[in-house]
Image 1 (cartoon, helix red, strand yellow):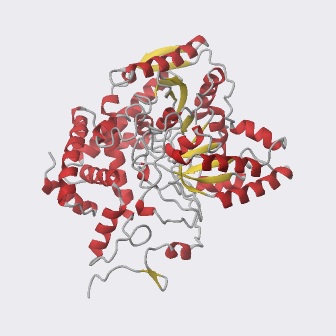
Image 2 (cartoon, rainbow over the protein chains, first blue to last red; image 1 turned 180 degrees about the vertical axis):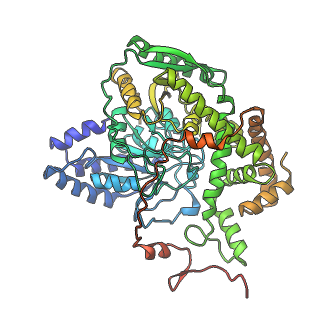
Length: 477
Length: 94
């Protein structure tokens, strides 16, 4: 596996051209159809972009991502390239505009290889709720790659792209990164523009990088972050996300919240994650036991907030302006109901119903308002922890990747599996998942580092220190 | 416990149609999910809207800029059914 930094050097040194590199990845994609990582592969567009990138490199105008072949999650709008959200609802939707992140990547001269599959509308943790390609884990194709950014994770781990963009509402970048043995980062809420990201839970959603190293995540973040007039939640900043690479760990305080290592977390996962903590301690970091009592309410609060927002956000799919439309409706009301019922899959309908329930008269105070109170308390607990610690270290997921088909009929079990990741979204803090070995069956395990809001560069620096000493596991495909 | 009647009302509010078989299936699942959500009732935190506003450091107001969008045709063209540059929907009143 070659990192973006290594590819940059090869491109600049003329050891390889972007066209050659792009052809190599396209060959890998064709050679591995069973991974089902992509919904759409843009061969012609990719080769054209690679030619332009080669000209840019030749004229000495290359930027950090010029000519680098990337994959993009299929819920990020790409002008004139289908953006389906892995849903029948948007099966034939081609956006007339680019998401802000795509404008920024295009300005760099990246090569977009295609759009990666995902859970429908990013709702799931396995990528198996996709109406189209159902991605597989490159470490064992009987297993899921995680989700919802499972296609992006599988594409990176399977060497079907140099790096990818995902989106994270409750762990959708970090959990698949953990399952597939790669690095994935959810930036602080407000770091990256959400304009053009198909909305799920607007107060939780954030676009982020998935790559072969933390350093690559920093390079990609440098390209896509920044204030955007189209998204008023973005913050003005001048952070260099690679500024802490090579940092000294000595004296860094790392919080270990005991609730994240309780029952329900696999023993092999606990052992590997604690080994990572001990590694940092060996470099001079101080490990401090901390507590997050709200964790027991976190999954409920997350699902109530996310589904309430989804119920509102997905009301725009009415079969009129864009998206799927039912055949021969007899009335306007039937047009809307039948278009939505036929266009959305089971999990999406389930979450819309839950969100409507949480917001409905008589239940609002008991559910939605209570979830807002838990969110407030969760933020306060994070503030308290980060007043004593620089970083917090936890498992990324309670288990390694599981077999495809498992959990799909048990939504409660599926939701509870998000326990390790949702608090970062609830609190709006940055978090990164880094591989820390494999279990006995050879499936990757990941640990997460989180930090206070807008301390993203510190996370990348600390993750990079670990990766320098612990190479990522390599998939056998 | 989510009854079929509750679920039908939720479907109406959500603009979804479920068959009888789906109502049974979703009813059982929703009951289990609401059971999980009910754990939040055990918490004794009070929501303070003023605190929330203060706790969000990134709501820096941007300068208002008026921008024209020059691809309205592109949007209309993507409608499921379009005649003479208009979205088509079924008649509401004959």
